[in-house]
Image (cartoon, rainbow, N blue to C red; front, side, top):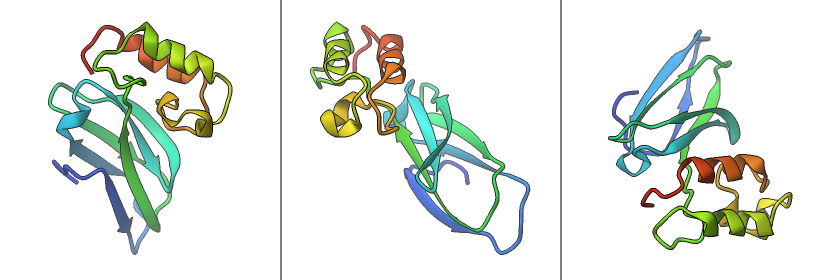
Amino acid sequence: MSNATQTSLSATASSPQSYVIFNNTVPRFANRNVSFMVDGELYANKTANSTGFVSFNYTGAWSARTFEWRGFDPDVNKDGSVNVLDLNMIGQSFNQSAAACSNCDVDGNGAINVLDLNIVAQDMDKAA
């Protein structure tokens, strides 16, 4: 798959394959951490380049699969910048499920934890 601007794809292979490489450009993911999900499960995390390009090499078993790219949004409080206020929001819901604060679950893994804090800390003082 090359230069796809979509963020999800369902695919089926009729014969086993050893790997497939997904090259995807989503401009809103530029310079952001991106997670690659397979059938709703986290498969890999990477950082997109300045144009939003990111590549994932899937080596798992093939059959019917759903692939999804999720860009992390570290601007938890949606004020236009990534700063200590975003860390504070995560801290208020720390060690809870994403249901407590969906924006606080920055990496989308269902839990508000140190991984979310790390993503925000890496993007501090950057414009959202």
